[in-house]
Length: 254
Image (cartoon, rainbow, N blue to C red; front, side, top):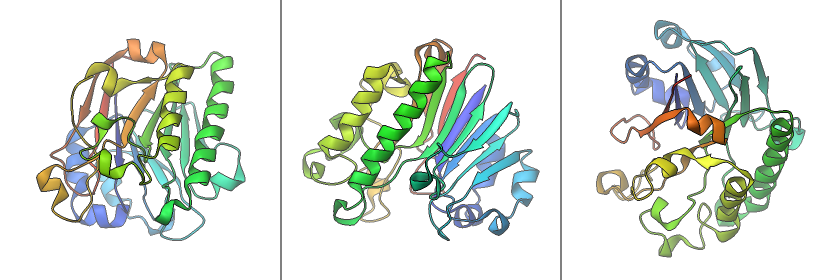
């Protein structure tokens, strides 16, 4: 089973850049897209159909903002939008797919915002999501959380850690939440497999950052232990264009 996550930074713009050529070639069983920035009726489903996918969308109430979508070839037993908290669910940040082997969460975590004004909202979202996942673990569920976490966990996860210590995405109070998830029992699948690799998933459009590889690793797979035992690889597709993020795939032997 292959799952691919990708923050497309606007599905309409990304589609015009030809991302579906790569999506069709990549042929993931499930594709988790973040920051689609569109309502369902604004999305051209033709390339989705051509690539052989069904789709499930969770758009934000605010036009042109946030939103996630799952494209899938393997249908889940259940599909759900949100985490039962209207404060967060109006922003279209979560899709949950249920499979016999695991619960899959496609998540666009909040950004801390200009002048870090939304950092408290972001941290509250991390807290609420973990509480939601804990309830599932109590029920015996395995979990995959993927998407744009909007946080670089450790210094290895961004090119310039020292100059970003006071910027959202690398604040101590943001980074500690990744620690909290790991302490609970989640595993950062890529970092577990590649403990010393300095590789990124996001680059600002400014200053030629991508060409210089001045980036951040913001896109993750946090998985429970049993899921990790079925993980064959995690691939960061740094050469794939179409967004300021690149896609990341996890290969599972389910």
